[in-house]
Length: 439
Image (cartoon, rainbow, N blue to C red; front, top):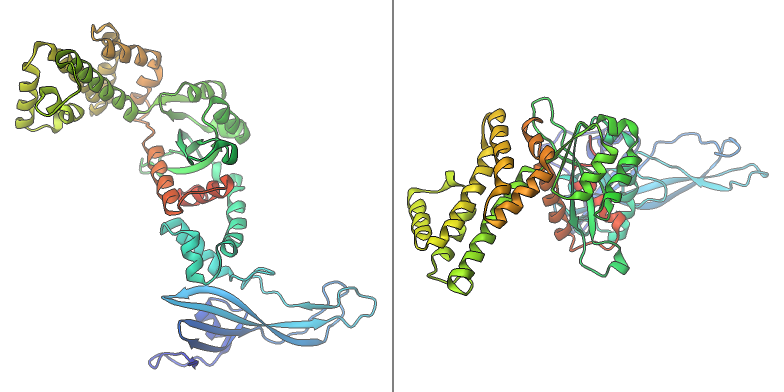
């Protein structure tokens, strides 16, 4: 049953324009009626009378009445809201004018030929940005189809993505790759994408990471081409470039960001140390027992302890570790590898960066001479990345942590959407979700 809605305790509003300003936030139209039928609320609006001239010839045009145009607005709780706009029509009286009839336009209410109000589009953008919403879910709330909502949202995202101002002020730049699909590359293109992230610190020294862009491919060319497209001013402003230990990105930084300081990500360096310990444990396990780890094997029982930091182990856990190492003389290699990994952690955990750098330099001078082949290989790797490895201690602990956080947001929104088939749509959605379209 249709009925007018209202609040018994609310003050009466006699001015229709004021009533519209309260309901819709618009002063360009006035509310004529508000009705509710089931879970659908209809708000009938119109514009005040005014003289109208033909857009082409300027001759005053007589009215041709109105037409009803149904628009979808922001839902009210579980209730869908429809704006019924009584849109005015006119006819040009000039015989030589090709215009004929024309209708009024209220850009603050709805774009020309649109079915979603401007307020609904703004609301949808906010939900996508801050509430982890999906296009399909918002379309259901608005009572429209997926493509109807996306066609209204996409132009705004493209406009924001095309704004060069969002690249200004970037002094610390992170880069990382991720997989955006697992389908046939002949249908969707490369599986790997390269993501660029703004890691610039704010006035309080905190990193507010935001995604700057996504490009297809994981290579030196993909990163270098993007840097070239940004222009010389952007490249000159980048002082620190954080990256994972991947030679392709490092080559792009050396070529296009020659004045920037490349910093090897601390998380990935420590991860390399942990992997070395695991490799040594598996090798020693195979050499001493002739099989992979099983329940009851000393080294199998401490595999999780070997991945933890020494500062986090309890006395009982340290006793378990010592018992397992002392069970066989060959286990000493595992202990040495674990101590090397702990030295690597200690360098990064040092409160004083100067002391941390001293520890890091000792690691560079000693690891590559270790008789344990896995540790020696790690030492050679760190020596190849010497400058980027030590730069962590001279750049106020710059790292790629913010980039990894952005990757987590991307993975979340990709799962919520059940995957993407179109790269451009994927790029725009991730830029919005990961803060790339706000500055």
